Image (cartoon, rainbow, N blue to C red; front, side, top):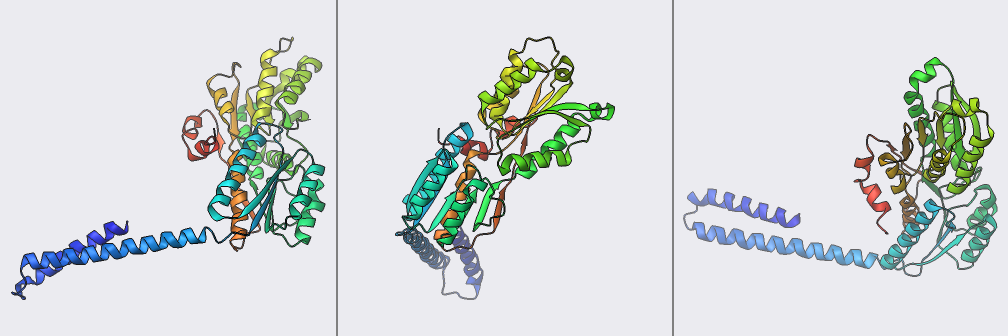
Length: 373
């Protein structure tokens, strides 16, 4: 860009000096052009020198973090979303550490107790910042407090620890997901709701703040004529969701089964289990499910728009990419660089249904999500 600017300035100089030629008869057009060319070359060289100096300065800055350390603790890969997230998280830590020269300790743990042990291990290494993705927020309260008591800046990702204020927290906008789904369901079933109650099922993820926010958001905006027939906690498991749906279909009355038109879930993988159960059902009830929602916006969910194997059932989801965890790591880098963080960061979400899923699959967020494959 600077080189283009230099050429433009040279052209302007040529025009200006040529215009003055009638009053300075000693200067020929050739001499004027030569002078302008020399000036342009000098300016271009100066711009190149500035660019090289800036690049050298940036490279030097990239080594300023030697001797610093970042600690990162995440859940173990208990399901697809977490597995993808861990890959993105570790990739981001490695990339930034190589670029900026800091050390890091990356640990995963399946249970809260194991995460507490991981926190203690990393604290023993005297980190300069920690990024914590709790399995369950409340159970990591003492560990989070231990980090802060040690004077280490703490960034919490994905799940809140109620009543605890870290240096900063960052998460997807779960409230917006719930509220948006409630509005979508209400519009989709507008005519049915005007005529009376619409039966629905809700499949939550677990007992953390994430499902709480999504559920509260949904019921905040959903039409009052939605009737929750039953609620399930799936532990984010496709298999468990399938078994729960099968149990509902095999144990409830025909009337209850046929009353269900809507299924609100908290994750795409939960939807996959529900779809399998619905496809396999061969009981006496007529299935009247018309809409099933998820959260994540992964490749598998996109395939449901093409062929789900369920006639008359439509799907919608919200973006919640595993690559979001990279932003938490980048906040850790900001701390190492001495920057001041905001108290909280919400990562926006977008609704995906049959009207826009193809466009979404061409978006940067979708491409980054699958950039590690």
